[in-house]
Length: 272
Image 1 (cartoon, helix red, strand yellow):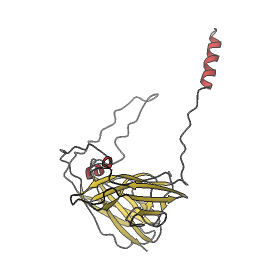
Image 2 (image 1 turned 180 degrees about the vertical axis):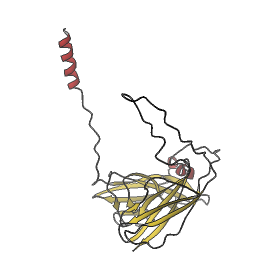
Image 3 (image 1 turned 60 degrees about the horizontal axis):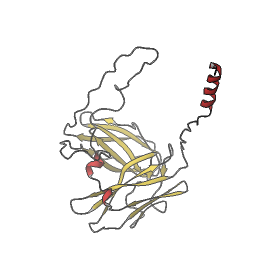
């Protein structure tokens, strides 16, 4: 067979290969799926059922107050669950304490968003047991019982009543045991220009060492934080501002992290 015919056969074969279909991303219109993350046994014999959620939208944020569209059963509809749903997967968002004699009972969290209902079922199946350290390490199921590191301690300064559109200062005081030691910032190695040159941006981005993140858990409208990502702790404090889109009651969550373990605190802000 001539070289020309071989090339033609190869070209036809390539044309017949299946093409890769890019995953479809929906910015809005999709459901919010509650997730049961597991259960934690408390020293007093009670249990905490831990839930998160997955907002399948890439951009749409939804405010869903407790009621028929955001319901905990039994003893609902309001059991302290999130009422504002950020895009994509949000873990360890909500704990529901149940008594020591909960046994084989079950808690159901139902969320209806964009016309579609999704449910999560919380129970005490042995395979679902987790620990506080799993939550503090964001899902590390083997964090090491001999690890001397402890999560940071934090205090959030009281926030006065806020006004729509006016920035409110959020101040978090953080202390830590100094573990783990912050990784040093590496200087990117110089590379030759031209084809194949790379830039490793390790010198910027997320702060190393102690930091604080803010997250909206509830409220009738969007909260715009001055800094969405981690905020470095400087002289024991992390400071930012927030603006509120609508009047009402909001729940915000501050998470202090040392890079391995984290601690959270929720605050309530009334906006007029």
